[in-house]
Amino acid sequence: MIPKDHPRYHSLVRRENIANAALAGIVAMEGVGAHGRGEAFDYLIGEKTTKSAELAEKTAAALFLTAKKPVLSVNGNTAALAADLIKDFQQATGALVEVNLFHRTEERIEKITRLLEEKGVLVHKGEIKRLLPLSHDRALCSVDGIYSSDVILVPLEDGDRCEALVSMGKTVIAIDLNPLSRTAKTASLTIVDELTRALLTITNACKSLGEDEINRLACDFSDKKIQNKDILDNAVKDILENLSDALDRKVQA
Amino acid sequence: MIPKDHPRYHSLVRRENIANAALAGIVAMEGVGAHGRGEAFDYLIGEKTTKSAELAEKTAAALFLTAKKPVLSVNGNTAALAADLIKDFQQATGALVEVNLFHRTEERIEKITRLLEEKGVLVHKGEIKRLLPLSHDRALCSVDGIYSSDVILVPLEDGDRCEALVSMGKTVIAIDLNPLSRTAKTASLTIVDELTRALLTITNACKSLGEDEINRLACDFSDKKIQNKDILDNAVKDILENLSDALDRKVQA
Image (cartoon, rainbow over all chains, first blue to last red; front, side, top):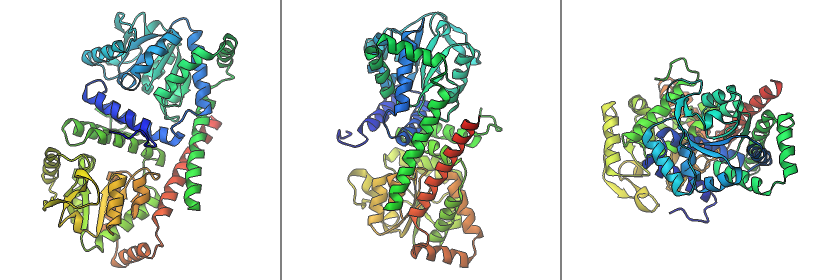
């Protein structure tokens, strides 16, 4: 349906994937709206991986490769957009993949697990308990998965859960296109980039970075030479620049 | 469910209304994502009616009150968010209200018509023909409604249809939170504001503006003293200012 030469082809395909996944019960209705918010911010950062996001992605790769127990937490939107990419990501990072939902139903957990397994992902299915310092089902995760991880990647997460994971002493890496969101500000490291671009870049970095570079990035992060605050400021600056350019073009026109 | 003292209460209620309307078949899945994009831009303009949007809303009121055949085109999102407000809007402006859908099905037309009528709106149901210079069902509208209107308000419209209506010589007033969108740039006048705030402000302006003020606004618009380009530039400037403030606060923190 969507012509391949449309300038915003990839964005429109992702929009369609999310709508179809919502109809299939994989994405919650709240996830469709959240995707729309992300689309708006992606438009503002220029629908490309910025230099600052690339540094965050390489740092994420280094943190994953030097972690004791790295975990990727997958929700409905992540599965709908990136099930294809997660197998490669898992092989490159050695991460455990756990399905963890904010709007949790057993039916959605099963559907998402099946979708990932069809794509060759090894899905972790440990004992589930209320382990995060949060009320209700949002506290659920597996004992030997998310609960015992030291580094966790949470794409498209909500602010409360991100905060809860940080308070447990974990290194929390978020993927969030809104650099002003609570998740973005709360995470240990935030990748302000679109999910599929981010996962691809992390996977490629794991394959191409040498051991020295990996150690240097991990050290720079622990020594606070790479700081989340700077990464977020740079994302806001990128948006400011793009908007100023749009304004200049209009003023000239 | 949503606590009334939540700082973003109104935004969260609207999000819930859209999700419920999608489940009820009033809002198309595409409409849920579109609402999310709007939310992101509303966040960036500060979730309030800016001075420049207020001028656009007062001008819209003047254009409606001086029109020969003013029409409000209602889609699923508009009905879900503002069915309550449209009766008052209709009484204040004297506008004909027509249900017109991008993702058109007779079932959705009927559901939206019923919702509006339950709220006391008089819904126009004229003969429907392919009348707009567009392919497929997107060309459908009523002969003695949208087709013969001189001034038309299209909240949350798509770019192609907005362009088609302008090319037919109509004064097209759009409500669009993205000042960079094709709809925003194509419309005769764009209100960069959230839908319910915009409709309320137009309704109040119709009630409170004196005849002199109405004529002055309508003249300023036809004399190009009020220009869409300036209104859009001001919206981008408002976003730039809000983002710069956020950056300053972070740099200070």
